[in-house]
Image (cartoon, rainbow, N blue to C red; front, side, top):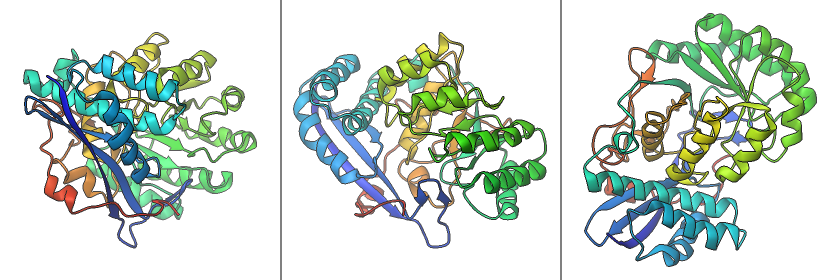
Length: 379
């Protein structure tokens, strides 16, 4: 079965005024994604999602030109060979770095969708997993920088929906971050897990100031306090309190995760299947983390494609952590591109789709109705 065609489709959705969330990387004004449609010479079609990287048009162009030229005609079921060719010719030799990793991630997910459809199995079963419940937290573009009382009310709403864990956006100022965390803990009580994400917005001094409060409030993890390249700061910050550190959504391929794990500063790894190299590479990263008894807690991306793939992976590895539920009020890419990718069960968990491949029926008319909107997604 050969790869006959690859098409990238950058899509956008303007966030309605009044539903914008502010976090460490700005105020969300639109949602972007890059979808990949891969067709085979036997008629099977697979869909993947590449993270937009704040430049969806450029990522789509890279897919339509360079990646297509590299892999057209290759065996659509030989995902390892396709991955290796793109890595050798684009990431390793030409230094395209993040852009090539994003593009390869979407291609890899589409090929796994084809593999599942070819044998008639959902991905979790193809990967050796089972339909098990994966614990989830309320995350995505939500629970941002707002008044503590308003934030506490929002958090209570997600708990009422069935979530038993949630993630707050911090990285504002230490005092405001702590005030928000205290308000939410008071509102939801001691039995709900609270995680915090600084979106690389902290300095080491900020971490020194917030750690005593985060320890007191039993915060489950402090995510991405620093740039992903600032390995030394992670090592230093891990010694400043009991609250563990989490990172990985902006680390690309197993080679960057190798150092992250070897340094021993991070207790939770968070590869994004649409960033780090797709499902193929995320499985390798999960195995590396498993060897150190560390769970894998993927960052989820813009659409239901990534979300469905992430749950399949978590149902098939031996060290699943949290699934990040996108609870943003304004994200039709979550629910309308291919149907609802997950529901929260009575136990606060999610389960993988049961149809072959990713298990989604992609609505191309919906995609066509949401063309790329130029400009930044955060301001």
